[in-house]
Image 1 (cartoon, rainbow, N blue to C red):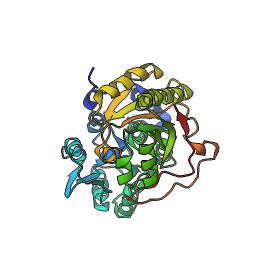
Image 2: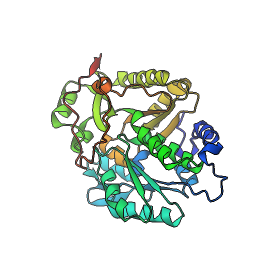
Image 3: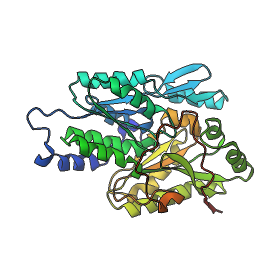
Image 4: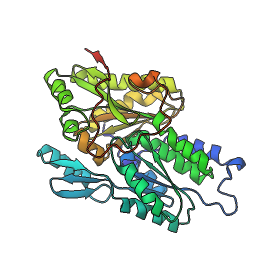
Length: 354
C-alpha cells in the first residue's frame, strides 16, 4: 500500500479543536474589530505538510533552506530537491547544507509586515544543529515590525507541530505572550529516527567519526533522538530487522504516556513501504490521524536515504529522551552552534537491543 502523499494528509482533527478553544472571547477571537493576527516565520526543516502551509500562507512564511549537491545549490520548495538529492547520494556526490541568509529572513518579515501584521514570531530548528536561528536573530532588528525569535530545540514535525499550533492560535486571536509560550513548548515534542548507515551523519558533522566507524564494525543500528537541541543515541539495536520494531515500540510507549491528545507523524526518504507499515502500526496510538510526510531535503541530506522517523507532540509531555531526563530543563535556550554540526555527545549511554 503506497504512502499517502503529503498533500493528501490531514491534520487529524486537533486543529479544529484548537480553533474552537481559541475562538472564545477571552482570546479576542478573529471576529473582534481591528483584529490582526501575529505573523509566523519558520524554516523548511519544520516539515510542514505542503497543503496546510499553502492554506495558511497569508500570515505564514516558510524560509527554504539550501542544499548543495557538488557545486549546485538547490532551494527546498522551489526546486526538485528530493529527486536531485536522491541522485546525488546514490552517485556519491558531495552533499552539504547551509543556513538561509539573514536577507531571506528579512524578506519574510517584510512580506508579513506588508500583509498587515504588527508582530512576528520566528520559530526555527535547533540552533545547535544549524545557524538558521542565528540568521533570524541577525535579521530581526531590521524588520519593519518587532520579531520574537524562538529556538525550537528540535527538528522536523517535532518543530512543525509547534509552528502549526502557533499559526492556528494566532489566527484565532491568541495574544503574543501565549503564542511565544506555545512556540517554546516545541522542545517538549520529540523525534526518534533510524538510519541504515551513520556515514552521511558523520560526513555532515552531526556525529563523530569514531561513532560512525564503531557503528559500522559492530553492526550497531542506533535509534537516535534530539534532546535539548542535540542529536543523541537513544538506543542501540544490533540488527536492522529489529530497528523498525523498536522505533514503533518507542513511539507507542511515548504516545501512551502522553495520552489520547498525542499527535504522531512518520517521516521517510525513499522507503515508502516501510513508512506506511509504521503508519499502520501507530494508527491506534492516537485519536488523530498519523501523518506521513517526507523528510525535508535539508534533513535528508544528513540522514541519507532510507531514514525513518517518528515525530511526537501534544498531550502531556514525558521527560525528554536520554540521560537528561532526570535533569531540569535549562531555562536559557542554547545559541547557534554552527552549521558545521554538533557531535553526538559522548556521555550519552544507550541501551542495546539484541
